[in-house]
Length: 538
Image (cartoon, rainbow, N blue to C red; front, side, top):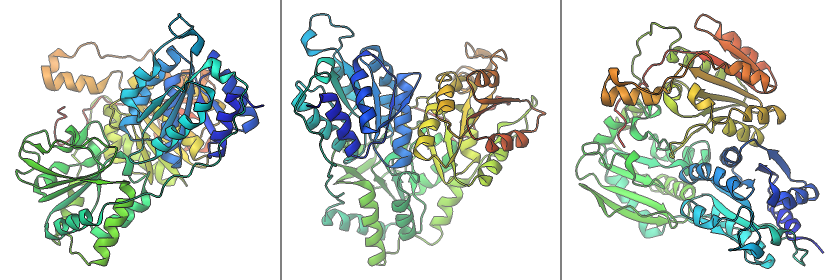
């Protein structure tokens, strides 16, 4: 007879899971053992949070379910902050955690913790099966919920005494998800009429429908509209440098459609004057998304529901094309494009390499790569990269505002896309969060060129202090030259190089690209404020 662990792991394999990101621990060793027979690869990380970040990136770049496996107590707690990032980025991942045995509930068992009470507020579904027979049904619910509607994380806590049981459970076969459903016909007609009547419409999506994750739906809808689609997926909202001067066209819009994008602070709804009073807003959300308030100040919101955002994008594209809808004034698409691609001029610094100059050289390296993926891990330096670099596929640290997951993101992306060259950018503060995962990148032979823009400080916070309190009130955010990130990378088995202001960065990038494996370039830069058109206000 098979064990509960074997049935669970073989079920995951039957449902297409090929890799699990994990940090080992006592309660989950039965699952490790079961992975041998199921031929599931384990990527063994150095921190539980990194395992979840890797699963998040893997899911976004592969289009599949990401799976992370951690142990109980502190293992689960270490994973929670990364779980929040996956929730905010609307990424389908399954977090499996070991747990204290049922037989010790309330009796002070090893690492006993009410895990579901912790994860339920930040997951779509969280369960602790009460018997072996319930494990597979709860697993099915976790997977279907993670992938359905608006994608997101789910959590399955597994008591150790259940995992070790010998049972008559048979592994379940492939998961059959219902076909993705779009809007009701009456809602579709309402949206089409609104688009037909508008002169200056804007279509705004959320992270679940960005270009990397839903390329076909974006191409189809943009072609039908003749208009760029805006994806708001940054914690900085409208002040993110990637969006350029988006606020100019946002204020000129006479119709705003939110496609799966929650009406939160990042849309400009909460900041008076960002959107012209009375501008109609249509919010098209999946059934499992939180509904917006009926009105935000002076902005009426019409709420519609759908089963799936990409399906609705394709549905809109087909209807616009079939009905030969004139979407907007002839000059509006150019105005939108000009605004979102507008960039501030930058002044040369007096301390060495300007981050904008670095960005230009990085863009050249990206252009030379056969299959590049750009990953930007927050911070002020990455705002320069977002302003100056484009890539066919990219991933940012997302709406949660968390930083530090970049190395783990790059590893997850490499596992999902082994033939890609991953360009990872992060600041020197950010690099310290999961620096030990460089060794995981070495062990997985991840093809990563990691660029640390090193200005010896937490520059995003420095700029907040300058903007809020004045330049004479900068305090507590300094770093220094004593941290040699290139040497640390070499010590962890990677290739590393320090690149000073007068060193040849182009040559260093060529060397990194030619190397099969991870390279860390510690590039000294000026600590410049991000090139944003409006200040960031929460």
